[in-house]
Length: 502
Ligand SMILES: [Zn+2]
Image 1 (spheres, rainbow, N blue to C red):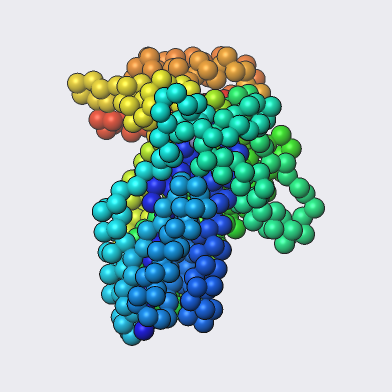
Image 2: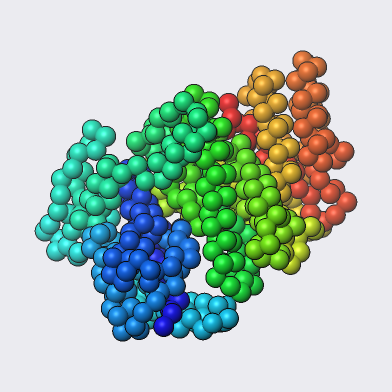
């Protein structure tokens, strides 16, 4: 009898990012990637025999298999595999599964029922990655407050860790994890460059032009659930998910190699696979990296799905796109704050994409949202924008930003921010320009005209005028849509980006 089995690891982010130390994060990420993409298949083949195991897809923590054999035996092996995940992660990771009989010609139905069972298992046993409780007299783990068991040294500091966190650190030290994939990519290109991998977030922060700042870029595929639901056989599922996984890895590696070609830039890959990407890098490199990843991913999926009969129908013309969120902050910002903001920005980018005029049932354009948390003392991006970047009047509303940006607009924003940096326009001038819109609708215009008029150097003035013109903020300087009830401006976004790049 054939069985379709799906696996997933719930609360991945709690496990991988339950610490502020880079080496533990990447150790956790590497261990998860290893168990997901290599460990699971190996375990099943050893237990059931090579020919009984057909891997459909594994990546991003999830996997799918067709298994041949007796129902009872398969269930036993799945239970053993779950034990292996707990053991390997010292209690940090849990595997959940759903199994359904594979009825010939009814792949989609079998998959839906396997997913349904997995969902049930998740809901019935909610899981929190909590190591052993401590009694109050025993030292707490420096990373997660669990019961500490080991003393370790890292980056010159003594750290006291629990079993789960120690396992992450240990795995991170002895395994290159996601960085290995990047090095293999560089080798495959015949590139001789070896890039230095940072060991701490502080190291990434101090590599930025704006010292002490770093960025977290979070991306994931648009419309994925919808496309997957339209797939009706194993071959198509395997082709689709493998193509997406390959495209996101390639796009990430290529864009990262471009970023790291700038000698000062430092970056690390924190999550990569499935349709997800999370990269931490120098603040000035983040926006160009994000745009490049989005472009490359779209080109690659368009090319591969366009020429394959196996591609799901909706992907053949336009491929698949990404949404991206970039959270900028100081390198000592608690990691979970940056991560939550990156997630919030990603959701905002997705909303932007689905509201775009070109969006339809099978295509959503790429959107990017970004936020510099150090400018505001709010945890949520939405609160910062409501409190500081929006002003409501009786007849009109002022929005001091135009985020999220479509990929086209993001290109323009980046190009003009770079031009302003290159023009050497004094920082005092750009900072005052950034403040101008906050003076109000009329006064903002007057202040902008005054400030731009006072720029003596003709070239520098032209750079500003070109930027505002192309961002549709020149006619009613600095506002867009002055006729409507909502006036917005891209000027603040432009200057914020400029300041992160110099
Ligand atoms: Zn711990």
